[in-house]
Length: 276
Length: 242
Image (cartoon, rainbow over all chains, first blue to last red; front, side, top):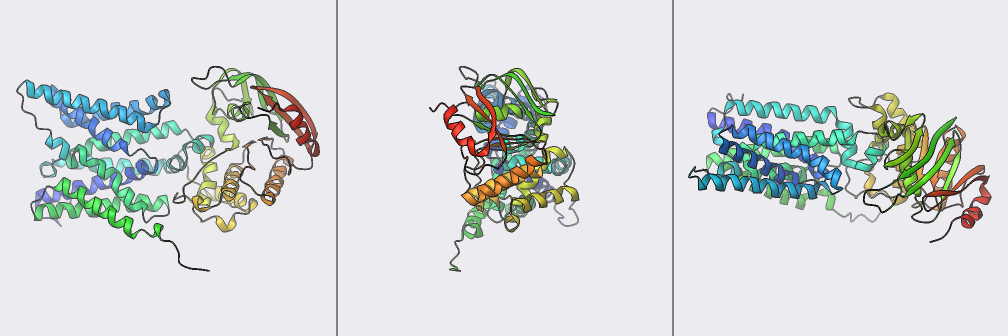
């Protein structure tokens, strides 16, 4: 798609993937940050990681099994939180431990069987070996994410403001919340190939956290967060290839630096010296 | 016409040793102004949340505007205003007063529908009614507790509910704002909207017949109508203090 701008096919694919992932993760990150469920990032990424490890063990497509396992965990999250009357964050902690255990089990067992398996690809991602179909999948995911947010914008807005008030106003909060969890699960599972299971957490949290330092409305946050993600990610890809640095970790560091600068420069922390 | 019909309801919370509401019956007609009183822990908030389907009613019948609240809680909540007892919005909450007031209409609009011109007009009226015009573009977290309370009342008025439930709506309000909100509620009741209000503030009741329902231990132990000037004395006499 961007070949006319970037002649190098590998770099072009990486930038395209980063841009699409920035849209989906940046937008979902706003919802995640606002609803205080940031641990969904590492829980889902480790669910995808566990599913992918199981897929490799069973000789199945790891991307597909990663998605399936994430969706399974996402489907369980809401009902388990409701049933146990625990916060979603606590349930996420339980799911994280389970996912990590499943992943380690399969990796260890494959090593025991002498079937060499390196988890580094899943943990840190690999932007240089993306297939065109994967980029198309990310493009579709971005469109689905934008469409979901647009269709349920007012319900999501109400949920992000206050769940109890949203429920009291007659909104079917569970339907919308479960839908959000489902989209996050699929998004994480598809993006795990690019930035990896560990670093996707940064992508889901940091762009929204940066946007929050400057935005006074949710609408602006939904625009600014993916834009920040796209700019930093594209720069990270360029710098990674230019200076032969690992792209995923480099982007994570760039996000953190940008967040630190945002906190320092945020107008929200200024105290007026005006006496009138 | 009966707007609320509760018959022998029991409401319990998960893990509770016994139901909070036990065998309560109550009927509220259009235009009634009902003060729900009683000591702490009597079940007043649970009564309001049993009416709008937020609390789980285990036995008995709950009909609100003819709808079975046990089966279609969200349908009931679309038609019932509910001003919560306590809330906190952090100063950086990126939602303006106007947006928060509009949220009152979201449930009624249903999925896939954006606010239209009539919705904005209703919101404008609600904001005007509560005197929040100058604050409408301000993030709600930067308002004082009393101003936030007014915004929450405006949100529920914008909903255009058939019934209004209020849980301690005067808790954050100064005297002049209490008077002001009382006049607003009186205006709604005069138009036929039943008002059910849990309150311990009786110095600014409207000059009209008030129905008092006193709760003790999950039941209504006193239910009668009186003049507003008699309310405080009756509540003091009939509420068993903890």
